[in-house]
Length: 137
Ligand code: SF4
Image (cartoon, rainbow, N blue to C red; front, side):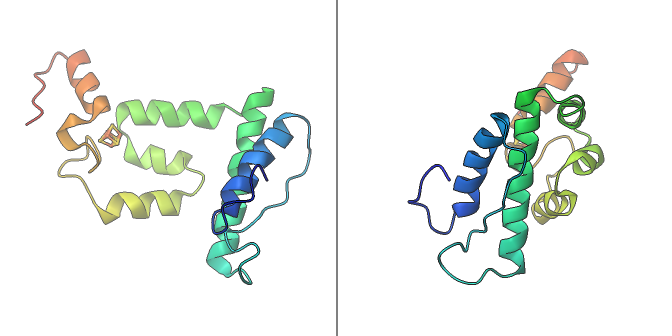
């Protein structure tokens, strides 16, 4: 753990330290839940802890140049560029959660998400590259 001042977020402090340790040669990461030193973790806490540790391990694999580690990220980047939501969900470490977030506030059209709407950088770039007129209002 890189700091001990974040009770309730110890899965994050642990994952930061885990990524650094694994990138420097640690072969095994223990997960920590957000409930650490606060209560007995529930199922949701355990899931959050495990997902944080998986992200740390994957980040370390990329940092170490492990063959194939970047491929899922590259596929995700390409899906983001094409605004291909199904491919993004397929590439996501937690496809179910990603889909639930997206579907909880769906955009008016599927060429962006509800964060930036018509000001979506990907949408704008794709329109420019396709020679289309860009309208943001
Ligand atoms: S609308 Fe914004 S946050 Fe959503 S995909 Fe586009 S750039 Fe990303």
